[in-house]
Picture 1 (cartoon, rainbow, N blue to C red):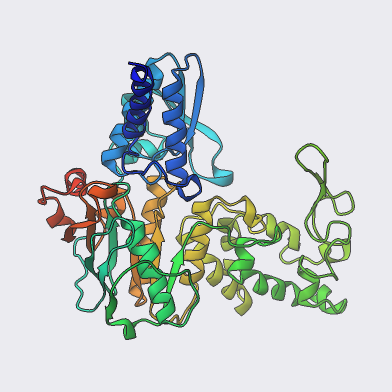
Picture 2 (cartoon, rainbow, N blue to C red):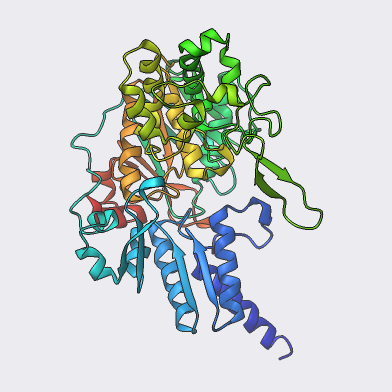
Length: 490
């Protein structure tokens, strides 16, 4: 009798966790080991449990890490919050969540300088009628990400024997080579345990690299000799320095600096490539060390950043800024977007200009044409950083056969960006590489050559192989939740 109210409260709060698709988590799980999506959904469950009314909730991509089955539960929870008398604003690319909205505000039409306008606002039926919105075109199917006409066939593979990390039930899994494999399954089904905790560290060690200790498994076998390395393309920032940017990461800036040293005025003044660098003394502004901004440390508040008064934010000394190529100085070039710079340098006839375009093109191919050349790496989102890394591999002309592992590369991506991402993935495979992707997005799953579906559920009810095969076959697998949701896409 004493515990009755407490038990009711405990059961109610646990039910909220189940409602947001976190039923697979153990109660002693450390919060530091949770993904961003899981942490966000725990906060959501806490809000539901507190029964607050008259509040404004803002969620940034709550569908991250969620299978379509769990997204349906999330939508139900968001509607419950709304029905309690709250306002819910969601920043989202997931089709199901957009379609469940009462009101949609679409920003665009494109990204970067070509965006920033309200393209549409209204209800979902009105959005589908809109002619200006890219979102509308994909929702109404007038544009779509095409299903491949043929799936790539495979003969060679790498096999993990007896994988039993976390909830994996001692499974044997074959990962095909030279194709696009997608690892699917509901949240907590064992995808990360299999790929990130077992396969990646074991292969990294095999190829002589350093990695975390691998999870529990019996053996690794198959055609490892056909690959030379394994790369895990995560969403961590591409550079620790605030001066790091996409063009320095892709080595395109080396060629841009070389081009400026080839100009007559630069030769006359004896300027070298290092004078056009903001990483070393010489040509950069001495006051801000080539940052363009000055950091003012505040004792009890967040630091503030002010434009450098010596160079007016232009990062270089006046003598360097006087060197022009086709009327543009080095600062003007760094202020260009990748698309603008590609068009600008394409007009040039020299070998250096060709090299610059060659190195910038992969950024356009992965949908980052809107990013400024000089944009600091620490202002890029996780998804953008991941695509810069992908572009760096596309830029390598004669790369050795490598296995690339991606964990939810569609995070933060619109349908239009996913279309470009698929082109980049196909380009990597055409160069002899192998791709393994952990993904919930049906647009990527439908393009897979091979699907490995884990489950059936999450936690202790997961860890088994539900299905291995092509997208056409998984839709006929009655046990697979992925197959059920993929059916309407194929």
